[in-house]
Every structure is written in structure tokens, then in C-alpha cells.
Length: 344
Ligand code: SAM
Ligand code: SF4
View 1 (cartoon, helix red, strand yellow):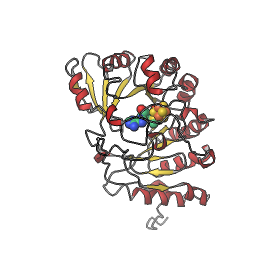
View 2: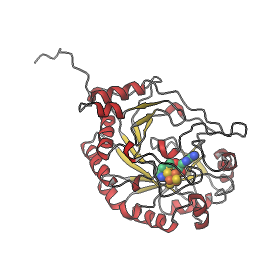
View 3: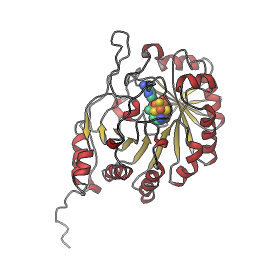
């Protein structure tokens, strides 16, 4: 055997590294822009959704995700809109589960509003999903109705119970909303930590037109942290989930509390992720408009080579970071598309 023959670079030896030497190992995939809720900070009540014909089929989403896994992505998060309302979505989880079995993929996760979890928790666990993020901003049923507009609180509670019973590790994500849930963080901490769930607080981001004024809702987490530390002992810990949250341990409960602070603290320097929409558009940064169309190269050929090249070209354009601002002088979203399009 001649060991000096130069090898063609193939997918297995490629790696996605951006111009700032950040390895891209995490893909978030929005499988639908539709949702059964209408959260006030996320959508307007009368949303216009994409025509169904523009969506990638589940088979195409599978091929797309597999292309990224071939290029070194180790963590996939399925999100939306509400991912669990997409018809036959369990097929995609089952299919992607093969990459967990082969060891190519380290983690397959999902972010959900919890409305369909009672139905799907066991199946998700059977597909190899171990951790689920549930978005829940309040434990007060009336406030829940006011925030989600269309949500059913008891269905979400049943979903959380079912997911815990199925052995899934849960993390609750709550958007910090001034004058809405700022008096509830203590209750949320207790609720989560009693159930061995992490809690992460998120600042509202200026994404997409909504019906209200975001300056009214924005609550800096630096302020929340200062307030919490008057009643709880917050110990900084190096815990990382591959996401942008910074964690503390609360000495009194032993549980973890994360802070995602895109507005008050820029976390871009360690960004390892990109986001794919349900139409096959790749956004290299949540806070920037630049994007790459991956649907055309996917459909152009049965070979994955055009797709690999389009992904690599897109990563070579990944920007250094975002520049969100919420203030009364701009009063415009920094980015026109909604979180439900790019996938939170
Ligand atoms: N429907 C699912 C859910 O709610 O978990 C997944 C998609 S949702 C867009 C993902 C996350 O984005 C949710 O935790 C939601 O609270 C958050 N989100 C939506 N709009 C946001 C905004 N403008 N600023 C900050 N977080 C936002
Ligand atoms: Fe739907 Fe999630 Fe947006 Fe709420 S945050 S409207 S649940 S996509």
C-alpha cells in the first residue's frame, strides 16, 4: 500500500471553522415558523406564516442536518415556531437518532413551549433525546394567558410532568419581562430546583415586529441578578451546556440558574453555532441579516458536495457578533425577522 497518495478531502476530515477561529459545532434548526401560542414578545396576534410549499420536507431537513453532522456539527437543537406541532415531526427525531447511535452526534435536543410534551415525551426519550428546554415565563395562569395569548397552562404543566416521568432532563427558559414576571423569579427558582430542573432567564431581544413596545418589556438581567442576590447566595460556576448562558449555583437550593444576556453582556466571542430556517436559509448570526440559501444546493444534486461547499462558504462569512440595541430613539427591531423564523 502506498501511504503517500494524497487523500481527497472528504466530509469526515472537514471541519467548520469561521474567520475568527471559532469551530462551528452546534446547529439549531427551526422546523416550522408556525406555533400554537402567540407570545407577546415573539409574535403579533395576526402573524402571516410562510406558504407550506416553501418548507423543506422532513426528508430534506434530515439530509440538511446530516450534511452538517458530516462537517463536524456535534449538537443539534430542533426548534421553531413550535417544533412539536409540525406534522409527523417524530419521524425526524427517529431518523436523526441514528447519528447518536453512531456516535457522530453528541446531543439531540429540542426547545418547546411544552404544549405537546405530554403526547411526545416518551417518544423523544426513545429517540435518544436526553435534555429538553421548555419555555415558560410564569407559573401564574392568568399571566400565562396574557403572555402566550393562546396557550393552555395546564397542558404545559402536564407536559412538564410527562417529560420528567420519561426521564428527560428539563431546563426552563423564562424571558424576563419588566412589570410582568419580575416578581416571580423566586417562585420559578423554587419550582425548578424542587424538580431538579435548571432555570435560565433570558433578556428580550429586538427581533421582528410585535404589537407592543419592547422598551416597556426590557428588563436587564444585571438588575435581576443584583436583586436576587439580596435573598439568595449565587455562586459562579463554570458549568456550560454549549450555549450562551452563564450559570450560578444557588447555595440554598443546590440548583443551577443561568443568565442569557445578549443585551447587557456580549457573548459572541465564544459563539459556536449557526441557525437553519425551515426553508433552508442559514443564518450565521441571530443578530445579523446576512444569510445563505442552502435549499438550492441541496436540491441541485443528489450528491452532498454542493451542499457541503455552500455550508463552508457560509461559515467563511460568519460575522464577529451582533449589535442589539433597545432604546426609545430607534424603536425598531434590530433585525426584521421574528425569533420563530430563525429559531430561538
Ligand atoms: N416555541 C418554542 C418555545 O417557545 O420554546 C421554540 C421557539 S421560541 C422562538 C424559542 C425561545 O425564544 C423561547 O424561549 C422564547 O421565549 C424565546 N424568544 C422568542 N422571542 C424572543 C425575543 N424577542 N427575545 C428573547 N427571547 C425570545
Ligand atoms: Fe410560539 Fe415559542 Fe414564539 Fe411563544 S416563543 S409564540 S411558543 S415560537
